[in-house]
Length: 112
Length: 113
Figure 1 (cartoon, rainbow over the protein chains, first blue to last red):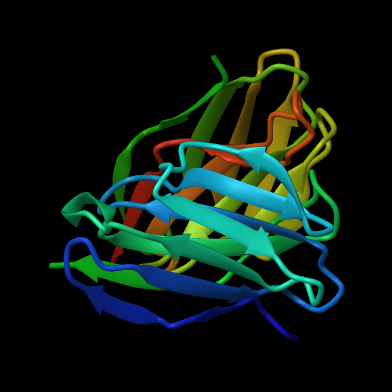
Figure 2 (tube, rainbow over the protein chains, first blue to last red):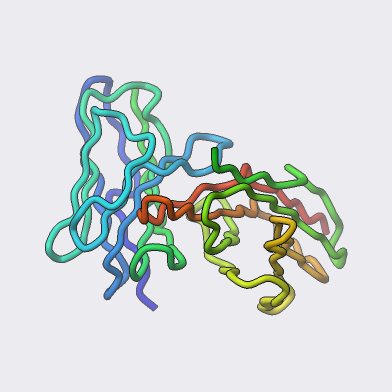
């Protein structure tokens, strides 16, 4: 069965650089969520989109922005990267909100 | 403030043992509770519980929800080394219809041969 696809899987950036993470939801899923997971921590919700509109916003820094496109894929743009942004970034998708979310493999971002 | 608390935080057992993982929650307008298994990669969906007292079962794993006492348990019988993982409990607060998940801290299960 098709799963959530994230790219890239690994990314190394320097401080103050920008990064773009991509997420392709499971086919027919219209809702996308972004989570950030630091070492030894549980995933923290960043932002979500339903039918290309932002549906919820969590602890996402102002330096980050995201959008969902007409084909339902989503991109998380991160600017002025800081060392503390190093983490695993998960994308999840679901059919509508409040249904089970299926997670992608994650993008491991390392900021040097 | 909505929160999800899991216990124990870590657990070490031997193959063949049965384990019970706990998840308690305080969430406005509860709708559902989800269990995930995370093995050094993305969380893998296990169960979604919405009704009290109805057990969901998948192989050696089962889970049940108590909406009166605000908790859920995840049982794993005849544990195997492949069950070693962090088990996450999550609840979506729906006050703003966004569907985000609030996760507990996770229970790190280690199954020894």
